Structures are given as structure tokens and as C-alpha cells.
Image (tube, rainbow, N blue to C red; front, side, top):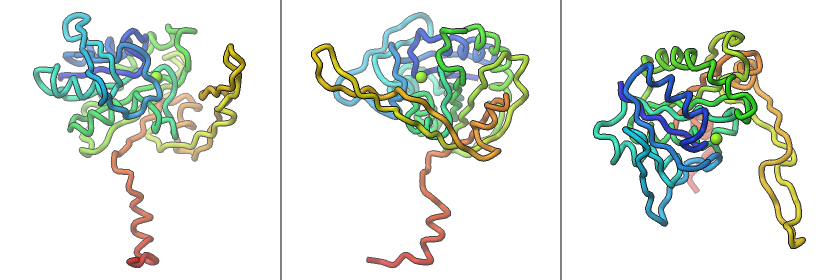
Amino acid sequence: MRLLCTNDDGILAHGLDCLVKSAEMLGDVTVVAPDREQSATSHSLTLHHPIRPVARGEKRWQVDGTPTDCVMLAIEALMPERPDFVLSGINHGQNMGEDVLYSGTVAAAMEGVTLGVPAIAMSFAGGELKADPALLTDQIPAVAALLKHLTTLSMPSDTLLNVNMPARPAADIRGVRLTRLGRRVYSESLMKMQDPRKREIYWIGGGSASWSGAADSDFRAVEDGFISVTPLTLDLTHLRMLDEAKLWWSEP
Ligand SMILES: [Mg+2]
């Protein structure tokens, strides 16, 4: 199996290292990853300047671009043969609920699916891994076992799997749950402050976040100590709404 590994935390991230070590138990791994952190860049593509791949060893590339750039470059140019799977992560921090709309980790997987390659996005709900990187390192065998299973599933063509792992020791993980997206509620995420010259500035990303979600949501699974697996589709069409609209819609 040919596996393309990428992420949005940058090529030096511990989470990517753990993903690569897990993937190497399953197949032939190529890494194409951003040269710096690209979290929350979503599905952005670099159009206004060239991107340069720099070799960091055999089948290892860093790119001065976004996660989406990396996947496109890998599949269309750098890999002699198309990968069987795109694996993105392991993100330093959860990607649940509305997070998936901002996440570079999830977008990299989406780009794989867009280019016709099945993909899995993986995130670790432990926030900043630097505090305890061993917590994730210990999960490498479990990640490899999970990926081994997930890569045998026959998924619909426009689907990716969004995996979130709870921040607890590997031995305390209770299992795997198939979930749906929950809802994240941010409060005071925009912080007003002053620059050194006393000018008004704003910084996005502060405040706190809570969540709501049904019993089958990603948040609930992770809180209960399960690995959450959410199938996501690229088609954002609201199918039920489309059906209901037939009752009231009329041509303008
Ligand atoms: Mg990230």
C-alpha cells in the first residue's frame, strides 16, 4: 500500500512523526508536508506565488505552502505513482464539530478525496502536545491498528474519515465509535488589545470553547474515552431541505 502523509502543523510536528511511524507499519510512506504551521488554513490554495518542494530525505518533502498545496503537489507531481490513501495529521488538537470547516488537517484529506484518493484525517484531542508528547507516542501501535482496519473499508468515492483520539493513555482508550459532527460553541474568541504603539488590534483564537452534541456526536465519544470516527462527504447540499423545498418552492 502506498501512503501519502501530510499535516497542517508543519513537517517538524510530533504528531506527523507519530503518523508516519504508524503508517510505516502498513506500507510505503511518502511525506509531503508544509514547512511551517498551517493550522486553520482550511482548504486554501497558493495561487499568487510559486511553491517549492525541498527534499528532506528519501520520499520526504517540505513545501512552502498549505496542506492542500502539499497534497496536490504530491499526487500530481512528486509521487511517481498515485497513493492508495492520503493520511493527514496527527493534528495537535481536536478537529470536531465546526472545527472541520477551519482545519487544514481535514482539508488535506478533502483534497485527497477531491483528487480521487481515499483519505483519513487524524487529530489528537490533547491540545498542545509539547506538554506531554509521550501521550501520543504511546498510541502509535493503536493508531497503526486503527489505520490498518480503516484502510480496508470500501468507502463511497466522495467520503473521508475524520478521526479524533481522546487525550488519555493508550491503555485507557475504551474503543472506537462511529459518530456525527457535534456543535462547537466559542465565546470571546476575538480579543481586543493594543500593539506596542498603543494602536488597537484584534487577535483571533483566544477565549474558551465548549460544545454541544447528541449522544452519537464526536465530542461525546471523545469525552467518554472513545476514538471518534466521523464520515464526512464533500457534497454540502442539504438533501432533506432540497426534498422539503419541493413543497414550497416556486420559480421566481
Ligand atoms: Mg494543526
